Length: 509
Figure 1 (cartoon, rainbow, N blue to C red):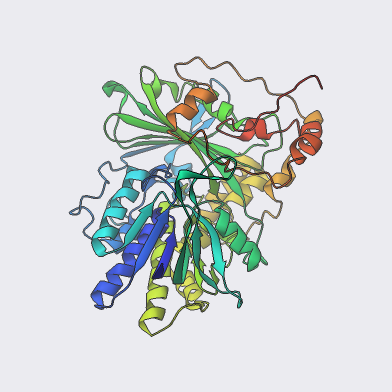
Figure 2 (cartoon, rainbow, N blue to C red; figure 1 turned 90 degrees about the vertical axis):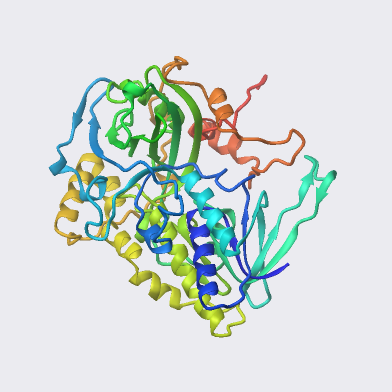
């Protein structure tokens, strides 16, 4: 199937790009075929974020979003930031000491930033997909992009969608449907954090040359229905400290959304030292703290999920262009970790990509070139400038700790980013210490009321697999876990995986 533009991933960046492409084509009365492939069974199925959303990019994309029924109904009305000292004590930070990037409330349109909203990112993507289809975009959910088509001139020409209906042993079932080539003049990769095609493109085209190594976090989230008297729509709580130790960086959030729902979560850097650490169990015990507990008690947990977060920022942002395509959103790493927000910057990266691609196609470009003008447009955008301003945020916390790094960032933001830029050139995995050098962590047993086990949590993630389907996780070196990781690191995969996928089963030996 041949189209003008293929977009891999129906997340915020991919859908914003699709909408912007068709808006321009319709305005210019130019025929354009845009196709979005999405591995989830429906748009929004793989979108986990419960977010405080800054609608700046949406204001540009659809100025009449309110009239169109966008799912932004709960403005952020009150902000609180805490430092948890231990399992009982906490210190609430006065507003004057909170870095400005962490302020989420305020009037309409101040300094280019409008009122923020507590939203479901999945619902936002479903709404964006509706707008895209109305504009003429074709969206194919349930199709996973498996390979990149690269021609003999090292130019990206589209993607191959994986076979469907294949049994665990690789043989075709009755429902078998062979994979399909989607060929395009330009392909936009918007797969999200650690997209498997994005990773290969970065390696193949050396897009990360001269950049700091990318840094990642794991984000765990639950959605709760809570009693009306505990619910304050638009209340935004953030915090750091306990239960994480001083060598483990991260922070938690608790947002009051609409319909008596609360979103609670923990984001933890993957540059931790102790291999006995379990992000899932840290999250579960965190909910027992007196700051968080009152908002959840008497409520019921209705959903759970976890995802990787690309959080290195501008220091780690790869080159986003290569012959025949672009990397956008979290596939590249456009999240602003200083704000704990990435939806608005991801959308903007998609919109800039769409404008660059349309400009090329409208001038008669037959595709396959490297769109170098994207880099200039991106660097001139407010999204890139925002990432520049917070370049030191994550590295300073890694270098000086939560309190010291927080103070550095507060001062840096206060004087307009004039402090020397901090870099973190140590890859996350290189910080892990041998198990023998670390204290084993004994986690409290879940109580089934506030804290839960992995099995019941994974059930609530609505993850579905057929019994007889190929395993989608393949080890590059099947011997490595038992040969190397078990003796040296007590095989941390059995603890870092938020779904309990990896197990070490001990027999006679």
